[in-house]
Image (cartoon, rainbow, N blue to C red; front, side, top):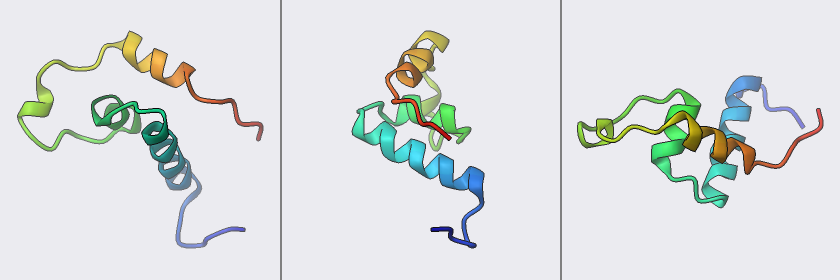
Length: 65
């Protein structure tokens, strides 16, 4: 079922955020992967390494499209 109020890329971002929560990625990993900016100065400290991002992505199940 399609929702005309949600663009396809936005839908994937919502799904990714939902799955990331289930897999306990944490906002510090999820937000940069979604392209979301930090909300506070504290979130700028101790960024997320490329390895941490790749490890998180590799924990996702493949989706056949």
